[in-house]
Length: 285
Figure 1 (cartoon, helix red, strand yellow):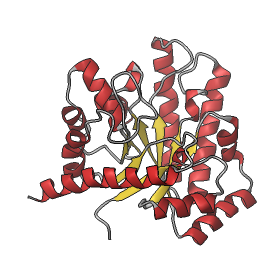
Figure 2 (figure 1 turned 30 degrees about the vertical axis):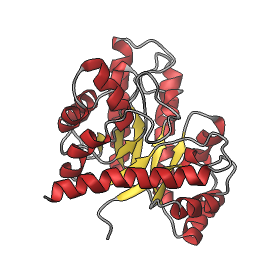
Figure 3 (figure 1 turned 120 degrees about the vertical axis):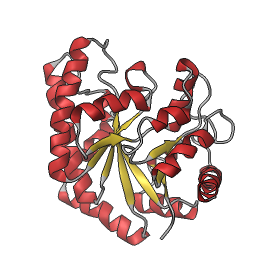
């Protein structure tokens, strides 16, 4: 058995690529699995309403490719957040959660990454935070029944841009089915704002971290930064993640139209693995 698993974010590949081809490409480029995206776009959000035959087709692609889907990135709540001031949006947020959990079960997924927003397109208030907590409790109850773990992504907004802030809600709900799935790039940018190191922040989440997104960032920028060209503190993050027992990592990157995208994927796999492998070597000493 491998000492850890490295997944690939679905959006690192062309959107029109058939699933079987996407899974095979991920393996060819050095990844162990693919993380499916259920974002706020109509195309990806509609996946929660896939028919039985559509779900079966993806399971067949997984079987044919011999490469699994390892987790789900559920960012559709950015448009339909738990904490919205609109009660109809809050109802939709729970419907999305329920259907996403059913889809996860049908696809054999055990972990869903949740976006750490009370609201995104609205102004946050005491009420949005109250509704967020109330509906999060309902979502975790759904997840516990389904047997699927929910992990907060640390985001780029002040509501939940650190592990410490995510832990506040993990402690509030106090369930084994709610934890933290941090984005190391976002944590690095947060460390520049608050002055607390990435390693120290991750230390606060010990025992509650399910997996981690490995993403390149620079100060003030959070997307589409090529690996090795940014300032993400991988070493600091992994100095805590590896000893804590975190064994699942996902390369978060985006396809931007480059015809040589597979070369970018292979570089990302090698680059991230070199960081993780070095952390394991240091931990073993």
